[in-house]
Length: 241
Image 1 (cartoon, helix red, strand yellow):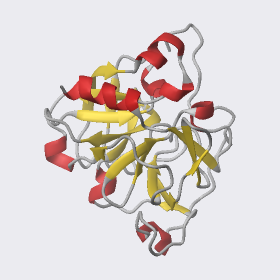
Image 2 (spheres, one colour):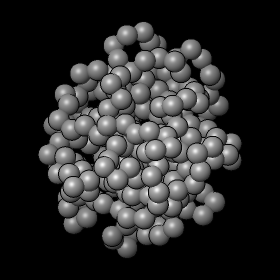
Image 3 (spheres, rainbow, N blue to C red):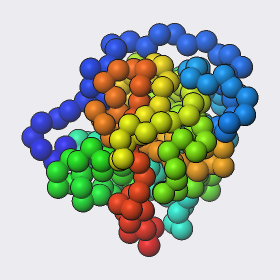
Image 4 (spheres, one colour):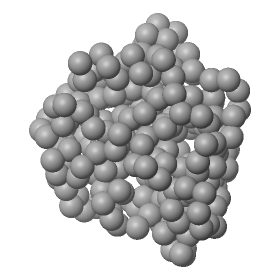
Protein backbone atom coordinates (compact mmCIF):
# COMPACT_ATOMS: atom_id res chain seq x y z
CA UNK A 1 0.00 0.00 0.00
CA UNK A 2 1.05 3.61 -0.35
CA UNK A 3 0.21 4.12 3.28
CA UNK A 4 2.08 2.43 6.11
CA UNK A 5 -0.88 0.18 6.88
CA UNK A 6 -0.98 -3.06 4.94
CA UNK A 7 -4.51 -4.33 4.42
CA UNK A 8 -5.49 -7.83 3.48
CA UNK A 9 -7.61 -8.17 0.31
CA UNK A 10 -11.25 -8.91 1.17
CA UNK A 11 -11.30 -8.03 4.86
CA UNK A 12 -13.25 -10.08 7.41
CA UNK A 13 -13.92 -13.00 5.10
CA UNK A 14 -14.47 -16.57 6.26
CA UNK A 15 -11.27 -18.31 7.27
CA UNK A 16 -11.80 -21.32 5.03
CA UNK A 17 -13.75 -22.06 1.89
CA UNK A 18 -16.35 -24.79 1.76
CA UNK A 19 -15.41 -27.63 -0.56
CA UNK A 20 -17.16 -27.01 -3.84
CA UNK A 21 -18.68 -29.65 -6.08
CA UNK A 22 -18.45 -29.51 -9.84
CA UNK A 23 -21.94 -29.35 -11.29
CA UNK A 24 -23.47 -28.46 -14.61
CA UNK A 25 -23.53 -24.86 -13.37
CA UNK A 26 -19.86 -24.61 -14.32
CA UNK A 27 -21.03 -24.65 -17.91
CA UNK A 28 -23.54 -21.82 -17.44
CA UNK A 29 -23.16 -19.15 -20.08
CA UNK A 30 -22.59 -15.53 -19.15
CA UNK A 31 -25.81 -14.15 -20.58
CA UNK A 32 -29.48 -14.32 -19.75
CA UNK A 33 -29.75 -17.89 -21.02
CA UNK A 34 -29.69 -21.14 -19.09
CA UNK A 35 -28.66 -21.03 -15.43
CA UNK A 36 -28.54 -21.87 -12.67
CA UNK A 37 -27.22 -18.53 -11.51
CA UNK A 38 -25.62 -17.70 -8.19
CA UNK A 39 -24.00 -21.14 -7.83
CA UNK A 40 -20.25 -21.37 -7.27
CA UNK A 41 -18.34 -24.34 -8.65
CA UNK A 42 -14.79 -25.34 -9.48
CA UNK A 43 -14.08 -23.58 -12.77
CA UNK A 44 -13.71 -25.74 -15.84
CA UNK A 45 -10.28 -25.89 -17.46
CA UNK A 46 -10.89 -24.19 -20.80
CA UNK A 47 -9.82 -21.25 -22.94
CA UNK A 48 -11.65 -18.52 -20.97
CA UNK A 49 -10.31 -19.66 -17.59
CA UNK A 50 -6.77 -19.99 -19.01
CA UNK A 51 -6.73 -16.17 -19.09
CA UNK A 52 -7.28 -15.97 -15.33
CA UNK A 53 -4.67 -16.75 -12.71
CA UNK A 54 -3.44 -15.99 -9.21
CA UNK A 55 -0.81 -13.40 -8.33
CA UNK A 56 2.02 -15.01 -6.35
CA UNK A 57 4.40 -13.33 -3.95
CA UNK A 58 6.91 -16.03 -3.08
CA UNK A 59 5.08 -19.30 -2.49
CA UNK A 60 1.68 -17.78 -1.68
CA UNK A 61 -1.01 -16.39 -3.92
CA UNK A 62 -3.02 -13.49 -2.57
CA UNK A 63 -5.06 -12.03 -5.44
CA UNK A 64 -6.40 -12.81 -8.91
CA UNK A 65 -5.72 -11.15 -12.27
CA UNK A 66 -6.61 -11.77 -15.90
CA UNK A 67 -5.24 -11.06 -19.36
CA UNK A 68 -6.89 -8.27 -21.35
CA UNK A 69 -6.20 -7.30 -24.92
CA UNK A 70 -3.57 -4.70 -25.68
CA UNK A 71 -1.31 -3.65 -28.52
CA UNK A 72 1.78 -5.01 -26.76
CA UNK A 73 0.00 -8.25 -25.76
CA UNK A 74 1.33 -8.23 -22.20
CA UNK A 75 -1.43 -6.65 -20.08
CA UNK A 76 -3.27 -7.80 -16.95
CA UNK A 77 -6.18 -6.22 -15.12
CA UNK A 78 -6.79 -6.65 -11.38
CA UNK A 79 -7.83 -4.61 -8.34
CA UNK A 80 -5.64 -1.66 -7.36
CA UNK A 81 -5.35 -2.89 -3.77
CA UNK A 82 -3.78 -6.09 -5.11
CA UNK A 83 -0.83 -4.17 -6.58
CA UNK A 84 -0.43 -1.45 -3.98
CA UNK A 85 0.92 -3.54 -1.12
CA UNK A 86 4.70 -3.34 -1.35
CA UNK A 87 5.22 -6.70 -3.07
CA UNK A 88 7.96 -6.22 -5.64
CA UNK A 89 8.33 -9.77 -6.98
CA UNK A 90 4.84 -10.61 -8.15
CA UNK A 91 4.36 -13.50 -10.57
CA UNK A 92 1.18 -14.22 -12.55
CA UNK A 93 0.32 -17.87 -13.26
CA UNK A 94 -2.55 -18.20 -15.78
CA UNK A 95 -4.66 -21.34 -15.59
CA UNK A 96 -2.96 -22.43 -12.35
CA UNK A 97 -4.25 -25.75 -10.93
CA UNK A 98 -2.95 -27.87 -8.08
CA UNK A 99 0.59 -26.53 -8.24
CA UNK A 100 0.84 -26.78 -12.02
CA UNK A 101 1.48 -23.83 -14.34
CA UNK A 102 0.25 -25.08 -17.75
CA UNK A 103 0.91 -21.73 -19.46
CA UNK A 104 4.05 -20.73 -17.62
CA UNK A 105 4.90 -18.19 -14.95
CA UNK A 106 5.01 -14.53 -15.90
CA UNK A 107 6.91 -11.87 -13.99
CA UNK A 108 4.99 -8.66 -13.31
CA UNK A 109 6.97 -5.66 -14.58
CA UNK A 110 5.06 -2.38 -14.30
CA UNK A 111 1.91 -1.42 -12.40
CA UNK A 112 -0.61 1.25 -13.32
CA UNK A 113 -3.17 2.67 -10.90
CA UNK A 114 -5.66 5.51 -11.31
CA UNK A 115 -5.02 8.80 -9.57
CA UNK A 116 -8.03 8.34 -7.32
CA UNK A 117 -6.37 5.29 -5.82
CA UNK A 118 -2.73 6.38 -5.80
CA UNK A 119 -3.58 9.67 -4.07
CA UNK A 120 -6.30 8.59 -1.67
CA UNK A 121 -7.10 4.89 -2.01
CA UNK A 122 -10.60 5.81 -3.14
CA UNK A 123 -12.69 2.62 -3.30
CA UNK A 124 -14.29 3.96 -6.50
CA UNK A 125 -10.84 3.75 -8.13
CA UNK A 126 -10.00 0.17 -7.12
CA UNK A 127 -8.97 -1.13 -10.54
CA UNK A 128 -5.46 -1.38 -11.97
CA UNK A 129 -3.33 -2.78 -14.77
CA UNK A 130 0.04 -4.48 -14.86
CA UNK A 131 2.37 -5.58 -17.61
CA UNK A 132 4.23 -8.87 -17.62
CA UNK A 133 7.51 -9.91 -19.19
CA UNK A 134 6.57 -11.47 -22.52
CA UNK A 135 3.64 -11.66 -24.93
CA UNK A 136 1.20 -13.53 -22.70
CA UNK A 137 -1.75 -12.71 -24.95
CA UNK A 138 -0.20 -14.85 -27.68
CA UNK A 139 -0.26 -17.83 -25.30
CA UNK A 140 -3.68 -17.64 -23.60
CA UNK A 141 -5.56 -14.96 -25.51
CA UNK A 142 -7.19 -12.00 -23.80
CA UNK A 143 -10.60 -10.57 -23.00
CA UNK A 144 -11.64 -7.09 -24.05
CA UNK A 145 -11.64 -4.43 -21.33
CA UNK A 146 -14.86 -2.46 -21.75
CA UNK A 147 -16.10 0.58 -19.86
CA UNK A 148 -19.46 2.34 -19.83
CA UNK A 149 -21.67 -0.76 -19.88
CA UNK A 150 -24.96 -0.68 -18.00
CA UNK A 151 -24.79 -2.58 -14.70
CA UNK A 152 -26.86 -5.74 -14.96
CA UNK A 153 -27.46 -5.45 -18.70
CA UNK A 154 -26.40 -9.10 -18.89
CA UNK A 155 -25.17 -11.71 -16.48
CA UNK A 156 -21.43 -12.13 -15.98
CA UNK A 157 -19.14 -14.96 -14.96
CA UNK A 158 -16.71 -14.25 -12.13
CA UNK A 159 -13.63 -16.50 -11.92
CA UNK A 160 -11.04 -16.28 -9.16
CA UNK A 161 -8.59 -18.03 -6.86
CA UNK A 162 -9.28 -18.16 -3.11
CA UNK A 163 -6.02 -18.03 -1.17
CA UNK A 164 -7.02 -21.22 0.64
CA UNK A 165 -7.27 -23.23 -2.60
CA UNK A 166 -5.13 -24.11 -5.59
CA UNK A 167 -8.09 -24.36 -7.96
CA UNK A 168 -10.14 -21.56 -9.52
CA UNK A 169 -13.81 -21.11 -8.69
CA UNK A 170 -16.47 -19.65 -10.93
CA UNK A 171 -20.00 -18.25 -10.59
CA UNK A 172 -22.43 -16.73 -13.06
CA UNK A 173 -25.05 -14.19 -12.00
CA UNK A 174 -26.50 -10.82 -12.88
CA UNK A 175 -24.89 -7.81 -11.17
CA UNK A 176 -27.01 -5.13 -9.53
CA UNK A 177 -26.22 -1.52 -8.65
CA UNK A 178 -24.90 -0.94 -5.13
CA UNK A 179 -24.46 2.77 -5.80
CA UNK A 180 -23.79 5.06 -8.75
CA UNK A 181 -20.12 4.03 -8.70
CA UNK A 182 -20.25 0.46 -7.35
CA UNK A 183 -21.87 -2.77 -8.54
CA UNK A 184 -22.46 -5.99 -6.61
CA UNK A 185 -23.03 -9.65 -7.37
CA UNK A 186 -24.38 -12.49 -5.24
CA UNK A 187 -22.00 -15.44 -5.58
CA UNK A 188 -21.09 -17.64 -2.59
CA UNK A 189 -17.60 -18.58 -1.33
CA UNK A 190 -15.57 -15.81 -2.96
CA UNK A 191 -13.17 -15.56 -0.04
CA UNK A 192 -9.81 -13.81 0.38
CA UNK A 193 -7.61 -14.09 -2.71
CA UNK A 194 -10.42 -13.52 -5.19
CA UNK A 195 -9.84 -9.76 -5.30
CA UNK A 196 -9.08 -8.81 -8.89
CA UNK A 197 -11.26 -11.55 -10.39
CA UNK A 198 -12.66 -10.49 -13.78
CA UNK A 199 -16.42 -10.13 -14.38
CA UNK A 200 -16.79 -11.35 -17.96
CA UNK A 201 -20.00 -11.13 -19.97
CA UNK A 202 -21.12 -13.42 -22.77
CA UNK A 203 -19.27 -11.33 -25.35
CA UNK A 204 -15.90 -11.94 -23.69
CA UNK A 205 -15.78 -8.43 -22.23
CA UNK A 206 -14.41 -7.58 -18.78
CA UNK A 207 -17.10 -5.28 -17.36
CA UNK A 208 -16.04 -5.47 -13.71
CA UNK A 209 -13.12 -6.42 -11.46
CA UNK A 210 -13.72 -7.80 -7.99
CA UNK A 211 -12.74 -5.05 -5.57
CA UNK A 212 -14.04 -1.60 -4.77
CA UNK A 213 -16.45 -1.40 -1.85
CA UNK A 214 -14.90 -3.01 1.25
CA UNK A 215 -12.04 -4.10 -1.04
CA UNK A 216 -14.44 -6.49 -2.73
CA UNK A 217 -16.77 -7.38 0.12
CA UNK A 218 -16.84 -8.08 3.85
CA UNK A 219 -18.59 -11.43 3.42
CA UNK A 220 -17.85 -14.35 1.12
CA UNK A 221 -21.29 -14.34 -0.50
CA UNK A 222 -21.52 -10.79 -1.84
CA UNK A 223 -18.81 -9.26 -4.01
CA UNK A 224 -18.35 -5.79 -5.45
CA UNK A 225 -16.69 -4.04 -8.36
CA UNK A 226 -16.12 -0.47 -9.36
CA UNK A 227 -18.47 0.61 -12.13
CA UNK A 228 -15.97 0.88 -14.96
CA UNK A 229 -16.37 4.44 -16.22
CA UNK A 230 -14.35 7.41 -17.41
CA UNK A 231 -11.46 7.01 -14.95
CA UNK A 232 -10.94 3.35 -15.84
CA UNK A 233 -11.23 4.16 -19.54
CA UNK A 234 -8.63 6.93 -19.28
CA UNK A 235 -6.23 4.66 -17.39
CA UNK A 236 -6.59 1.92 -19.99
CA UNK A 237 -5.92 4.41 -22.80
CA UNK A 238 -2.84 5.71 -21.01
CA UNK A 239 -1.49 2.21 -20.48
CA UNK A 240 -2.03 0.91 -23.99
CA UNK A 241 -1.49 4.25 -25.77
